[in-house]
Length: 436
Image (tube, rainbow, N blue to C red; front, side, top):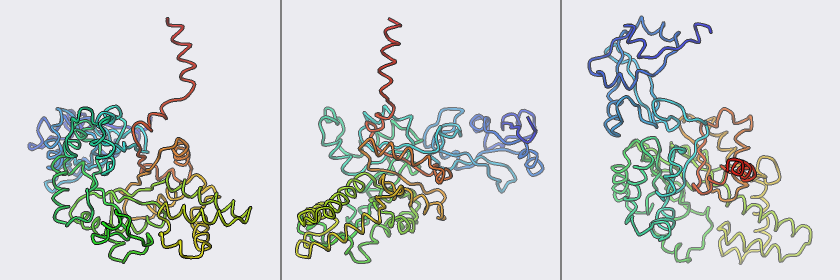
């Protein structure tokens, strides 16, 4: 081993009397940081400038917030060395969910996230995840109002659910919470967010802000009643940037934002202008829709049967790609739009045949951005093929430098499938028979 490869701990430097502990850090602070390592070459450069070690006020605040056991640094925080104004070297804590307890990196650069508000199922995966995503549908339809999930009606509202989720996952897991009604007055939204922050702490809370497109507070009621018939991309500039502007204001106030409802690659760069902490790529529904449109187009081309064009148009209406008023337009307009979408999504190339063109594009945009801490959440996965394809895509050489910026989110049940393989049964049968 060469000298330049040697490491030493802060505790060893104190024991060797190369560093003295600052009075405001004391024994408790030293016990929490003494296992942190420095390269020996770094030590030789450091010692001429300081002989004192300590922790920052932020470090102490984190410890108080989470009542961290003696001698430990909580998960979800990256220790950093800073040079303080008093001439000491201090250990600071920066929020970083890629870290486990005591400044250790998680086993994989790709992070995993539970897309669930069910404390019972999250508990089984709590030590495997770095993030948790929720939305109103997950909280209310899938859990609170589902007697099979909310057993015995134990939880009465989402704040009780959030408190239990926070207790289960601990300090190392971010929790994304979406506002109930994005069109409510901003004062009400901020009150709602503040309540969530009280429960989760600023360190764990991520505010989920949805893109709302052409919807606004005046037309959303008609939209829900099925009376709104406008193209999805026909909103005013104000409407189309409504979510972006709210996300930007939250970011300005120090909140971390999960900017959601991102389906197509062209959304990525504009979403990043709002300085989000997370962006998203919804993959499966979009991919299946693309394959369906492609199928109609192929049948139309082979047969020339216009019924396929008519069925295609209706399908595009059903998935909100066209408004109902398109029934009054020539069917060829729907066909041309479908052709453009299939081509844009590169459904016949390696780039998009697996439905992951938006993921690939978003990672490239992130690589070029000035937001080094922003991560991409890959979401909307239900079929096994999607996970298999995501897993393989992340091993493509092009993205080797970006996988630490990827979070894969799905239900714990979905992830559970991929811990398994058929051979488990075959070999367990042999092992168990032998042991019996």
